[in-house]
Length: 146
Image 1 (spheres, rainbow, N blue to C red):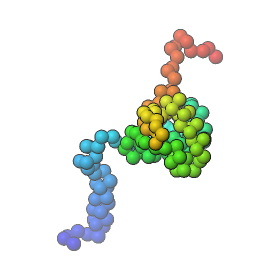
Image 2 (image 1 turned 180 degrees about the horizontal axis):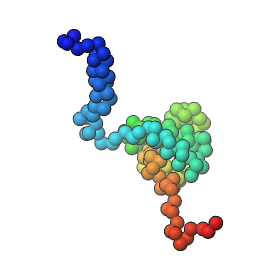
Image 3 (image 1 turned 45 degrees about the vertical axis):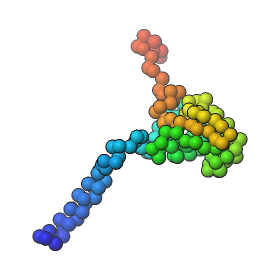
Image 4 (image 1 turned 120 degrees about the vertical axis):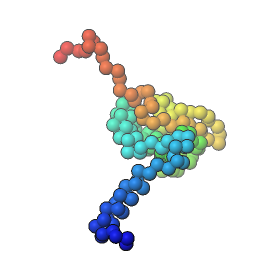
């Protein structure tokens, strides 16, 4: 190699590796919806959404599946049938139908259209759900005295 010592090759390859990791392509800047951080979303789901809304395991499975196929793919909306969702989540159709209704009632899903061919929903991220947000702190004069 052109005057490069073996220990410098390791450093140079490591530098190139980190440059590739942090490289922002111009295509990413032109995307309509940005893909959120999956780890952060999962933490918000488990730490905020599930305890505050008291989601059942079926609700969690349905929401996780819809979230994976929408927001984690960079899309806000999804058209699906209850039968497709039930097969994909490996559940029966009635519990899935009830879970979709509950999630819509909680504000987790926004039902755009419902037809015989399927549902169109907008899946909200945990931080976008009003019912899952932390309650506002009480003013100092309303705090309970212990």
